[in-house]
Length: 153
Image (cartoon, rainbow, N blue to C red):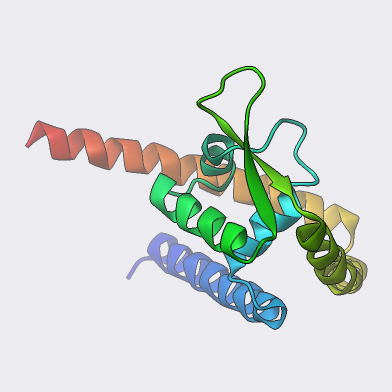
């Protein structure tokens, strides 16, 4: 195997390991990783939180996002309310139970994030974010290429 491919394998192995560790960390809060990210992001997104913008933000299929939304709704952490602008759109709103749970899970997550931030440092975190953005863009581009090739055949 050439060095380029070996580097790519090491890169994806490191990403897989990091992803597994994040999932393990989030299991402490009795939510899956996507549900936790949705619950946390409801308070941090600049726009109204809808299924569509969550799909765009997390690059996840609509059915996956919908399943997580329904699980959060079943746990009474969120409610869905019609948008004032477009009644067909449903906006995700935290319930009081959801706000309490979000507050409860954010405290240890923030403490953990602070420890990790101190270990890594701002400059390295900025580099990681830039690198992951480049990687994500390249994967999206390659996926589009594979879809094009698939249609060509």
